[in-house]
Image 1 (cartoon, helix red, strand yellow):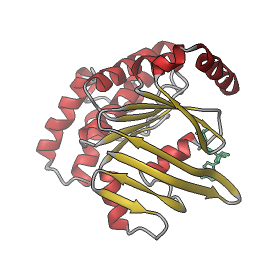
Image 2 (cartoon, helix red, strand yellow):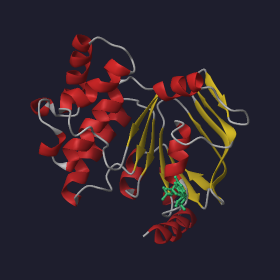
Image 3 (spheres, protein in one colour):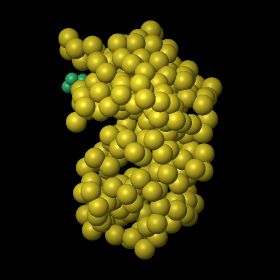
Length: 244
Ligand code: ADP
């Protein structure tokens, strides 16, 4: 359903993505791990065209963007409309209530009526366990609750895939599990997800594939059960030592 083919991205003189490719099937959960600065965030942001790669191609369903030519704004917009994104720092609008945060994209981008958007937003907020909080402002919520609002917001637009960029790394330890729990539930319901995280135990539990990134390259792609094999687990350990 998603094909990323040989994308390259350079900032100033630094080539951050050196030709990265990844295929993702519908319903798959991909976890990406790698040292800080290896290009994980840039890779995610390139999938939904928050960064524009200088070469390569991204296909989602029937939308294909070939970056060897300059893509039209229209095409970029269609691509982005198929993708949800959850950021490390939640990126909620502080001046909008929880409900309005989830409604915003539905009303302004998808042009759904306010009445209908309110219903959809409330349903997804209930799904992430925040029915009681819909009229609060983000500042009144814990980090874990804010991140669950961000997940509801991503879900509400009915995307083909949700990208998660270190969704738990800004959270206090005791709040991590409530967010991972919501993500596990989505995974079990068949949501297609690409997740950058350092939570290796979570990765082993929910990932269909674990993708190891270093220095703008994909080094390896393993299934969680392949990590039980001794040589793979030694490789993993070496890799995790790089990350810590
Ligand atoms: P990771 O997510 O693996 O930590 P990033 O994708 O955030 O890695 O960053 C990879 C490299 O690209 C880093 O050296 C970072 O400083 C650089 N980089 C990321 N975004 C920008 C930008 N907008 N301008 C310049 N350099 C950037």
